[in-house]
Length: 580
Ligand code: SAT
Ligand code: MN
Image (cartoon, rainbow, N blue to C red; front, side):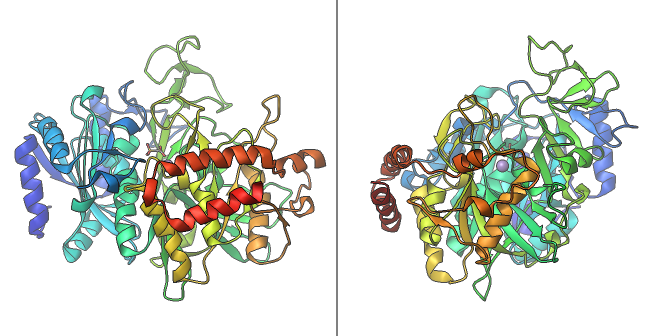
């Protein structure tokens, strides 16, 4: 396979003469190619076959122990003007960034195969989909991209028809953390990443393209590229509402997207559209519609069990690539809270010793195609996407944020999203459990200045009078003893039901200074071991605590200077005066 598209062929030739690979392989995305690469990596030790009777077609990859998560401090947005990247991003001038990283790419693929991966983010026949080509020297990246995107011949065909594509150049380099960079060039629609083979650093279709570059494109073209799951909620009467939810990495997006309704909620069904990224467009009628640009899941493994996420637990029993989990004596994968079996080997391949390290890395992952998901929605392949009734923001907060509240209107909702904060998780290198501001769960992923991003969000209020309602949820509130107040997981359906009832104007709500809160009677607690007091506690708004929060949001907004949209400061002022 080669290409008729001159621009693509030229770029591939250029990269080859810079990186000097032994071979060049154009990926066609076929099963034969996938199986061949798996076999090859199994031989080279890049992958280890798991117990094939218990886990057919499942493999384990161990990444370098220094290369286990996204590296936000080494991720750069390289716009001409520093201000365009904003205080929310690391910035480097494009020329300087190219020079620095090109130096590292020189001869980087010597002795290796260079893979050319054409891929499409979104259904190949969707007008909302966008294409890219990733060049990489990692076979692990190729097989992950096969599971995570629509890759190969069909994507290449679309690229040749359209004539343009996002360019992603990746090499694992020598995995030296000192020579690791993930650079984005929004003006050139290109990405260069070196020195990491891990997830969001290396699978360039995901965070690099579908969020950082796409958010930039989306602003220019009038749509939104967001860090959101998309889920369909079908009621016992057979009506389905679609909701898009933005939570930071490792805060339960995959679990919510694949939720199984508890026995107390007969007749309800959940359909998964996506678990991580949503591209949102207004259609001709002003209805917001969403597609999931991805075709698979790169989910957090620890904590997945029959109770927390049975769909995922079953889904990853076959055709799955595991990264950085432990092993049992039977060579089954093992992770914390799997609740079955015992580990004997840890994620670094050493004999398991609980004093040394956990068996699975806290950010260990599964990669699996979405079609393996028992709750996969038929409409996930629909080129026109699904209509969105509600947008939900959330984070991991021990205190303060109530279980759920509703914004007064779109503009207030933008403030609610911009004010999101969450405790950090193992999905990125750095300290875990620190509360940081994470607007719209996009802190690590917005490819431009947040102030401009909020202006873009605000601009939708003029474009349609049928916009989704905006909500905020917090599944993670704790009592004084550090116990979670809300059971979470499947029981979160009860909160989604209230959200849908609000969208359909079926229930009233209590107006507070931060927005509309459910009346306790409207959250179904049937069959739930939760007292009225606890529910009330979950739905309390303490103005004094909120005032502190608002002051911290205000300080954060100040870092954006004059660029902060006036309409957002207005919403902020309104909130502050409601609290005082
Ligand atoms: O490493 S990824 O960016 O792919 C996963 C995540 O952090 O959400
Ligand atoms: Mn994510």
